[in-house]
Amino acid sequence: MNLEDHTTYRFFQNLGKLFFAFASVDNNVREEEVEAVRQLVRRYWLNEEFIKPILKSDAEGAVLNTFNWLCKDNDYNAEACYKSFINFKKQNEPFFTDAINSLILKTVGEITASFSGQNKSEIILLAKLSIDLNKGKKEH
Image 1: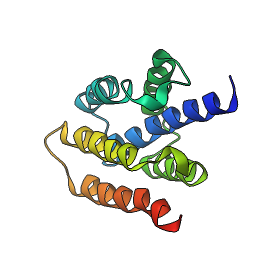
Image 2: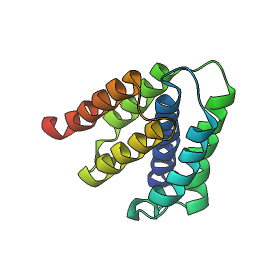
Image 3: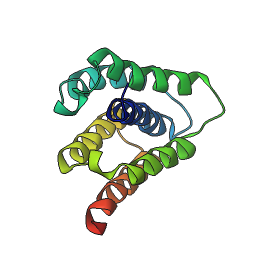
Image 4: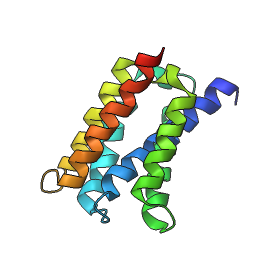
């Protein structure tokens, strides 16, 4: 696995962390949210051009295995996972094109809406993510 492959794989792992952060921001990951993550990863993230360096199955596994592990492990919370994703973003700005940022926001929006609409904590985190995704563009 070369450096580009490794960074792409880490990108997908960090998407798993971000999706967990949104599913767990209200301290309760529901089965509807777990199923939404599975479906949305397959619908949106396995068809993108940027996964070419790694196999689709590797990309899917990186997201879903990370997400599922975080659901079972009680050592990580939404805030820690969100911060980890943002730290990855800051170190890998080239991955975060307008198209990718838009797809990230669309995906987390659908995850949060998958169980009885969005609550206050989810809406606040969505707004924060929108700001954080746009920060790197202004600095370059």
